[in-house]
Amino acid sequence: MTTQEEDIIIRERDQWFRKNIKWLEHEVKYKICKTTGPMSSYWSDLLQIATLQFLNKPLPQQKQMIDDNMAGWYILVTAGRHIQSSTSPFYNQVRKLKLSTRSGAMPERSNEDEDELLENKSWYQCFQREIEKMNFYHRQLLIDKFHDGLTYDEMHQKYNITKISLTNDVRAALKMIRCRCNDDCK
Image 1 (spheres, rainbow, N blue to C red):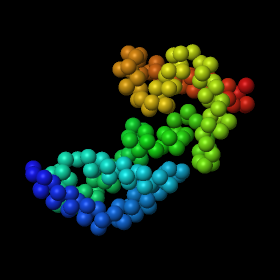
Image 2 (cartoon, rainbow, N blue to C red):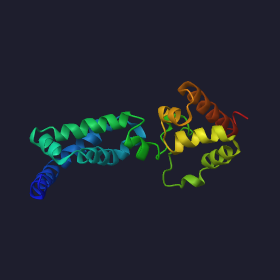
Image 3 (spheres, rainbow, N blue to C red):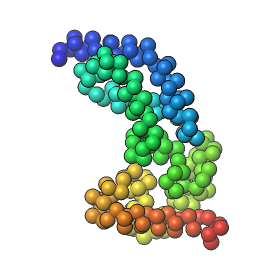
Image 4 (cartoon, helix red, strand yellow):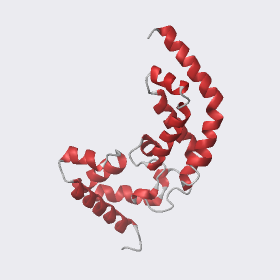
Protein backbone atom coordinates (compact mmCIF):
# COMPACT_ATOMS: atom_id res chain seq x y z
CA MET A 1 0.00 0.00 0.00
CA THR A 2 1.42 3.36 -0.98
CA THR A 3 1.55 6.44 1.21
CA GLN A 4 -1.11 8.09 -0.96
CA GLU A 5 -3.49 5.17 -0.47
CA GLU A 6 -2.88 5.26 3.27
CA ASP A 7 -3.58 9.00 3.35
CA ILE A 8 -6.86 8.48 1.48
CA ILE A 9 -7.97 5.79 3.94
CA ILE A 10 -7.02 7.97 6.91
CA ARG A 11 -8.99 10.93 5.49
CA GLU A 12 -12.04 8.72 4.88
CA ARG A 13 -11.75 7.25 8.38
CA ASP A 14 -11.47 10.69 9.97
CA GLN A 15 -14.47 11.89 7.99
CA TRP A 16 -16.44 8.84 9.17
CA PHE A 17 -15.55 9.62 12.78
CA ARG A 18 -16.56 13.28 12.45
CA LYS A 19 -19.91 12.17 11.02
CA ASN A 20 -20.59 9.42 13.60
CA ILE A 21 -18.95 10.54 16.86
CA LYS A 22 -22.15 11.96 18.39
CA TRP A 23 -23.98 8.71 17.68
CA LEU A 24 -21.14 6.66 19.21
CA GLU A 25 -21.06 8.91 22.29
CA HIS A 26 -24.82 8.57 22.77
CA GLU A 27 -24.79 4.79 22.38
CA VAL A 28 -21.91 4.28 24.83
CA LYS A 29 -23.16 6.82 27.36
CA TYR A 30 -26.83 5.88 27.46
CA LYS A 31 -26.99 2.27 26.36
CA ILE A 32 -23.73 0.58 27.38
CA CYS A 33 -22.88 2.52 30.56
CA LYS A 34 -26.41 3.08 31.84
CA THR A 35 -26.34 0.22 34.35
CA THR A 36 -22.75 0.32 35.55
CA GLY A 37 -23.30 2.54 38.60
CA PRO A 38 -20.29 4.64 39.55
CA MET A 39 -18.42 3.69 36.38
CA SER A 40 -21.09 5.32 34.19
CA SER A 41 -19.26 8.62 34.52
CA TYR A 42 -16.31 7.08 32.69
CA TRP A 43 -18.17 6.41 29.44
CA SER A 44 -15.77 8.66 27.52
CA ASP A 45 -12.80 6.59 28.72
CA LEU A 46 -14.60 3.46 27.58
CA LEU A 47 -15.31 4.98 24.17
CA GLN A 48 -11.72 6.10 23.83
CA ILE A 49 -10.33 2.65 24.62
CA ALA A 50 -12.77 0.93 22.22
CA THR A 51 -11.93 3.47 19.50
CA LEU A 52 -8.21 2.93 20.01
CA GLN A 53 -8.73 -0.80 19.58
CA PHE A 54 -10.41 -0.07 16.24
CA LEU A 55 -7.58 2.30 15.24
CA ASN A 56 -4.99 -0.39 16.01
CA LYS A 57 -6.45 -2.54 13.24
CA PRO A 58 -4.55 -2.43 9.93
CA LEU A 59 -5.71 0.40 7.64
CA PRO A 60 -7.19 -1.92 4.97
CA GLN A 61 -9.26 -3.64 7.66
CA GLN A 62 -10.46 -0.28 9.00
CA LYS A 63 -11.46 0.77 5.48
CA GLN A 64 -13.31 -2.49 4.90
CA MET A 65 -15.23 -2.11 8.18
CA ILE A 66 -16.19 1.47 7.31
CA ASP A 67 -17.23 0.45 3.76
CA ASP A 68 -19.33 -2.42 5.16
CA ASN A 69 -20.93 -0.07 7.72
CA MET A 70 -19.55 -2.23 10.54
CA ALA A 71 -17.05 0.17 12.18
CA GLY A 72 -19.57 1.68 14.57
CA TRP A 73 -20.91 -1.68 15.60
CA TYR A 74 -17.38 -2.99 16.10
CA ILE A 75 -16.61 -0.09 18.45
CA LEU A 76 -19.87 -0.56 20.39
CA VAL A 77 -19.43 -4.32 20.76
CA THR A 78 -15.84 -3.74 21.86
CA ALA A 79 -17.03 -1.19 24.45
CA GLY A 80 -19.66 -3.61 25.73
CA ARG A 81 -17.12 -6.36 26.18
CA HIS A 82 -14.59 -4.08 27.83
CA ILE A 83 -17.05 -2.94 30.48
CA GLN A 84 -17.89 -6.53 31.41
CA SER A 85 -14.36 -7.91 31.47
CA SER A 86 -11.95 -7.89 34.38
CA THR A 87 -8.98 -8.37 32.06
CA SER A 88 -9.73 -5.64 29.52
CA PRO A 89 -7.72 -2.45 29.06
CA PHE A 90 -10.74 -0.52 30.40
CA TYR A 91 -10.57 -2.51 33.62
CA ASN A 92 -6.81 -2.11 33.97
CA GLN A 93 -6.72 1.59 33.02
CA VAL A 94 -9.96 2.90 34.49
CA ARG A 95 -12.01 0.59 36.71
CA LYS A 96 -9.09 -0.72 38.74
CA LEU A 97 -7.62 2.76 39.13
CA LYS A 98 -10.98 4.22 40.09
CA LEU A 99 -11.15 1.64 42.85
CA SER A 100 -14.04 -0.47 41.71
CA THR A 101 -14.87 -2.57 44.74
CA ARG A 102 -15.93 -5.68 42.85
CA SER A 103 -12.63 -7.39 43.62
CA GLY A 104 -13.06 -7.04 47.37
CA ALA A 105 -9.63 -5.48 47.71
CA MET A 106 -11.02 -2.10 48.66
CA PRO A 107 -13.76 -1.31 51.17
CA GLU A 108 -17.25 -0.49 49.94
CA ARG A 109 -17.81 3.18 49.07
CA SER A 110 -14.05 3.76 48.93
CA ASN A 111 -14.39 5.91 45.83
CA GLU A 112 -17.12 8.26 47.04
CA ASP A 113 -14.89 11.34 47.30
CA GLU A 114 -12.78 11.03 44.18
CA ASP A 115 -11.23 14.48 44.66
CA GLU A 116 -9.49 13.39 47.84
CA LEU A 117 -6.02 12.00 47.27
CA LEU A 118 -5.80 8.26 47.65
CA GLU A 119 -2.84 8.61 50.03
CA ASN A 120 -5.01 10.68 52.42
CA LYS A 121 -7.71 8.04 52.85
CA SER A 122 -7.48 6.20 56.15
CA TRP A 123 -8.35 2.80 54.68
CA TYR A 124 -5.59 3.20 52.09
CA GLN A 125 -3.05 4.19 54.73
CA CYS A 126 -4.01 1.13 56.77
CA PHE A 127 -3.80 -1.07 53.66
CA GLN A 128 -0.29 0.23 52.90
CA ARG A 129 0.83 -0.14 56.53
CA GLU A 130 -0.49 -3.69 56.81
CA ILE A 131 0.80 -4.89 53.45
CA GLU A 132 4.32 -3.89 54.53
CA LYS A 133 3.96 -6.05 57.68
CA MET A 134 2.90 -9.14 55.72
CA ASN A 135 5.22 -11.97 54.83
CA PHE A 136 6.89 -11.71 51.46
CA TYR A 137 4.67 -14.31 49.79
CA HIS A 138 1.32 -12.71 50.63
CA ARG A 139 2.64 -9.19 49.99
CA GLN A 140 3.94 -10.17 46.55
CA LEU A 141 0.66 -11.88 45.62
CA LEU A 142 -1.32 -8.74 46.47
CA ILE A 143 1.11 -6.54 44.56
CA ASP A 144 0.93 -8.84 41.52
CA LYS A 145 -2.87 -9.07 41.62
CA PHE A 146 -3.95 -5.54 42.54
CA HIS A 147 -1.04 -3.29 41.65
CA ASP A 148 0.32 -4.99 38.54
CA GLY A 149 -3.08 -6.36 37.48
CA LEU A 150 -1.90 -9.89 36.75
CA THR A 151 -4.51 -12.57 36.17
CA TYR A 152 -4.38 -15.84 38.05
CA ASP A 153 -3.19 -17.51 34.83
CA GLU A 154 -0.28 -15.07 34.59
CA MET A 155 0.56 -15.57 38.26
CA HIS A 156 0.42 -19.35 37.74
CA GLN A 157 2.92 -19.07 34.89
CA LYS A 158 5.14 -16.74 36.92
CA TYR A 159 5.29 -18.86 40.10
CA ASN A 160 4.15 -22.33 38.96
CA ILE A 161 1.61 -22.43 41.79
CA THR A 162 -1.85 -23.82 41.11
CA LYS A 163 -4.55 -21.26 40.42
CA ILE A 164 -6.68 -22.64 43.25
CA SER A 165 -3.83 -22.11 45.71
CA LEU A 166 -3.18 -18.63 44.34
CA THR A 167 -6.86 -17.71 44.67
CA ASN A 168 -7.04 -19.03 48.22
CA ASP A 169 -3.80 -17.29 49.22
CA VAL A 170 -4.89 -13.93 47.75
CA ARG A 171 -8.21 -14.23 49.57
CA ALA A 172 -6.41 -15.10 52.82
CA ALA A 173 -4.09 -12.08 52.44
CA LEU A 174 -7.08 -9.77 51.79
CA LYS A 175 -8.87 -11.21 54.81
CA MET A 176 -5.82 -10.52 56.99
CA ILE A 177 -5.71 -6.90 55.86
CA ARG A 178 -9.47 -6.42 56.22
CA CYS A 179 -9.33 -7.82 59.73
CA ARG A 180 -6.42 -5.59 60.73
CA CYS A 181 -7.96 -2.45 59.18
CA ASN A 182 -11.60 -2.99 60.19
CA ASP A 183 -12.57 -2.13 63.75
CA ASP A 184 -15.42 -4.66 63.68
CA CYS A 185 -13.00 -7.53 63.10
CA LYS A 186 -10.47 -6.71 65.87
